[in-house]
Length: 110
Image 1 (cartoon, one colour):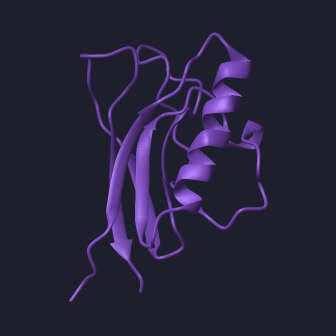
Image 2 (cartoon, one colour; image 1 turned 45 degrees about the vertical axis):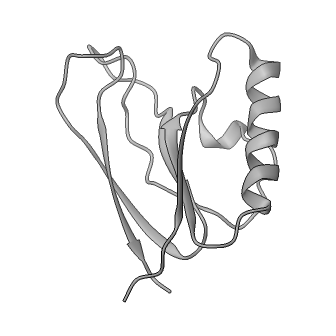
């Protein structure tokens, strides 16, 4: 039997780098206070290499090009999870947004 888990979504600012960094720090503080397991998916509007706190133990879905939808060149949509998950990501076709939809498969490993 799989354990219950916390789930959330986010959308971080694209144009204001400082606000985005501040939001990523707040997100790290929030997840530090959650009991595992947890996962948060969304539009992070930046590559994972720019995220503060890179020494934290989290699982990030594989980078997939999702933006812009008409000619994807940036991986900015992700799922971030506690170490209790194994994540896979698949880009789906779509035209309802400026991003391509991302299907996340999350499997609890403990």
